[in-house]
Length: 346
Image (tube, rainbow, N blue to C red):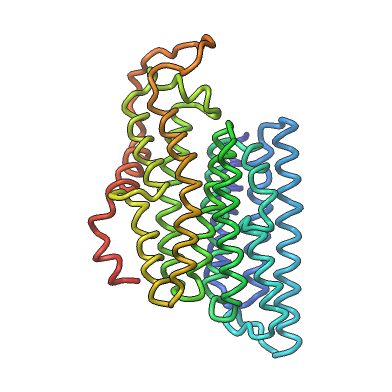
């Protein structure tokens, strides 16, 4: 892609995100979401491969539908209450339609079908944008309207997302699809707590973005997209493969790594809200996700393929690990000791 065009699309992405997260008016928030969608479409379709074009088309249809629902929800609320302020969403129909629209934007169950397919058709760097930056504006809308949304509906969607994200990721061999289902599972953790402690949702999103960025950029450095090629990447970059193992375990939420922190705080908050049964359910459902993270971690650090098929061995490379990857991996694995400081903020 032309560097000037890439710069324009990147600036548009940042502009759309900033407009949405800083607006109080529904029309401005909607405009920011539209700018975001239009800016990321060329980045998805830039390889001109039929799968990439298909992914861009699916992404456009899902996001356009969700944006129309956001507009419909805000107009209905304005019609009944005379308010265009995002925080003044009070009409029950508007709240229900907005929940569906944001769920579709994020890829929450039952509106998750587009996300794995779109991620599979994109490159790893575009997949990183779709998993992190593109989810930030809808999460902020969730944050601003959290007091108006139905907690029972959100809990249902959250438990379904965690269950389906873990279950569907079990038999995947494509790494991008595994990370897509991982994202759906993590969104379940963010959604279940948003009605009770919205700041915890944002903390979870920030830490999830950190760990996902480390994983995507490490995989992009190793140049792998399937489990079979990941198994032979150990000889190429042993140090990066080892740190990728720790990042994947952090994404799974194992102590004493960074990923354990948001899960610990969310379980604690759910227990305080007399929702111990929901906390137990979501903890048990996240074990499904743990299985495919362990599978990925095993493939990343294995030294010999576990079957007789001949694989091309990679030469060991002396190319240094990018500084950004090193910093992200360090923070993705070592932030747990600062949890007392973070818990005072949230």
